Amino acid sequence: MAIKLIPTPGQTVGPFFALGLDRPEWADMTRDNPQGERIVIEGQVRDGDGAPVPDAVIELWQANAAGRYNSPADDQTDKPIDPNFIGFGRAATDGQGRFTVATIKPGPVPGRGNALQAPHINVAFFARGLLKQLFTRIYFSDSAENAADPLLSGIDDNSVRDTLIARRGEGGVYRFDFVLQGKDETAFLDL
Amino acid sequence: MAEPPAYARHREGTQPPYLYPDYASTVKRSPTRPLIRLEHTLSEITGPSFSSGWAGAEATDLTKQHKGEPLGERIIVTGRILDEDSRPIPNTLVELWQCNAAGRYHHPVDQHDAPLDPNFTGAGQAVTNADGRYRFVTIKPGAYPWRNAPNAWRPAHLHFGVYGGGFVTRLITQMYFPGDPLLQYDPIYQSTADEAARLRLIADYDPNLSEPEWALGYSFDMVLRGREATPFEAKAHGH
Image (cartoon, rainbow over all chains, first blue to last red; front, side):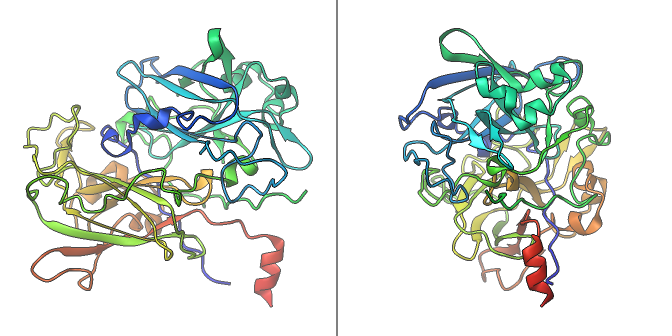
């Protein structure tokens, strides 16, 4: 058996990532007019002192409205690909640690075994002071599927589980904060 | 339904930790709760594809983005994006950003007392070819001070972002130069405990890549997570 190579270690994005990563148009995942319910997710990133984090960048990856990823690794041929939805977005925080993303509500996607996963957006989170990305997911407060979602239902502490759920407000705007440390610390995933 | 083929987990010590107090900014930004382990599903093994060109045109020569030539030592940086099993990863996006030869970023937050270069922005992008290869022409970035500790200096480095085939293969890292005396003092470089993993971050000088009377050549491969070996594959290898 061939020897496995060691993967390259992550290194922080540092404070100047906007030079290479800032693409404001990628924060609008609806720019090609995809099918599905238009939503906005906004929130703030805070550190262990509760201070806003002005140098974080969030990457989002999600299925289309039918629950299919625009990726060759998704073999759900019974669901349509939406050619107008890449499913990938990126948003950097502003001086107050705030971010806004426009997208569509993803459909549910299969989990392991016969489970169905509730609609969610996969998040890779980078910042100055993080040597590698943090992973988490954004679920939606108005999804009936949440109750049977394998990840959500496996978290016993309601206050921890709730950190993964974006709260629906007026006009299709959801609120989701990233708290890196402390009482309301976001549940981060080991993937 | 068959389970999707998962990506392999990192081996202990081969990635930096979240909390690494020598890098002071990790202290208030690293999670304190244990991470929740999740077995991979379609959500983790799928990822964006860049072959359609939606990410924009390639920008691989950072010395030709302005009217004049930037100051500094011209370099060629090329390499392959591979997985752990040495398989090349084609059609994946490679993003690059860096400071100029004087150690100053073209960014409003950077107030280091070193000149900006009107002929250098310091950002580029490439999509890997069928062999998983990328190639940039740029200038060697300078070292610069930072406020992590008194008289702390970052070794010269390029920032690279790479995707690979899945959401979990995403990598943002930094490339360093061989023989840099600052590496032994740099907590960001030193944060990875495993020495063989750490050495992945240092490019090789390659005289075969250098171009006479013009530019120095460096080789830098980036290795992304590969597939977990399935029982079927293990059996096949055994024969």
